[in-house]
Length: 64
Image (cartoon, rainbow, N blue to C red; front, side, top):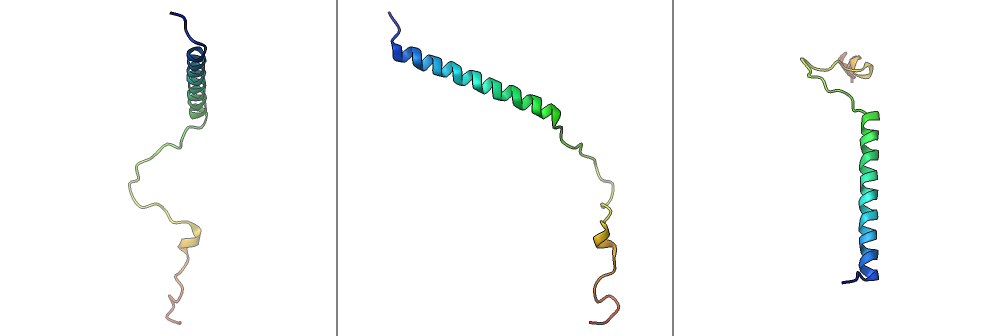
């Protein structure tokens, strides 16, 4: 039974889509190894505050 032109086109389109998907997947994998995320660490206590938080509080001296 001969394959129709439309069936061949559909199959070619499916194969091209699969190739593109595989290419994107490979590209993501390469970018993932290049852009490794920052390693997570377990905190044993509270994080130190930045300089903007280490100063005195407003109205701490009793004046308003």
